[in-house]
Length: 258
Ligand SMILES: [Zn+2]
Image 1 (cartoon, protein in one colour):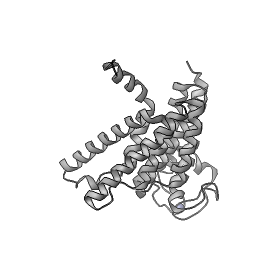
Image 2 (cartoon, protein in one colour):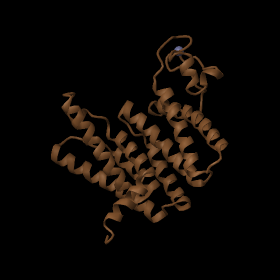
Image 3 (cartoon, helix red, strand yellow):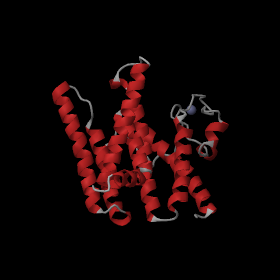
Image 4 (tube, helix red, strand yellow):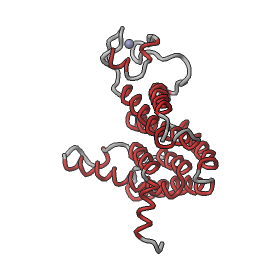
């Protein structure tokens, strides 16, 4: 059982990292540096004082508004901070102090940033997906699933979506999936290997179809206006990386001959 103090420290660290992820989510699509200058109000550009940088607490204390210009601050801030904190806490509890914990958290942070940017901008920036492929491959050697599974994962993930995008384009003469999705699934494949990449793709497709059907049922438009596919890939990958191995064992147990 993991030490309680380790879990508490990890959770607090997660909240601080979540605050940094918000900076990435806001600045990367604008092409700005994520390390300089210090955080400022996204509307009036006033530099934030130390207590306004406190994760979750600051947003609640200020009732979601800037102290000077009173502009409403996006609820994305406390949500991303709380989500990252919970992810770090659960990860620390489940994996304990280990390199596997580090690789899972790096992967999780990349997924959170890609999810939020795709949701707001319909964009999956290369500055995350491309280095992500290299980082995932490097981690795979140390914490598993090994470089062969990782390289196959990147090729299978990127290749399968590229093929789907290409066929869709030839048939419908419009872009269904972007190259961002292709590079994102390649990154996911590099981190979790080819088997769990298939699980990711399956879960993302199911989630995408369910949301699409719900939107059609609610007469809110067709599949085209559903959430961007990168958000489903992020959710699918998070599930695949956590419950995926157990799910695969169970599924393959049903067919022992395979
Ligand atoms: Zn302001």
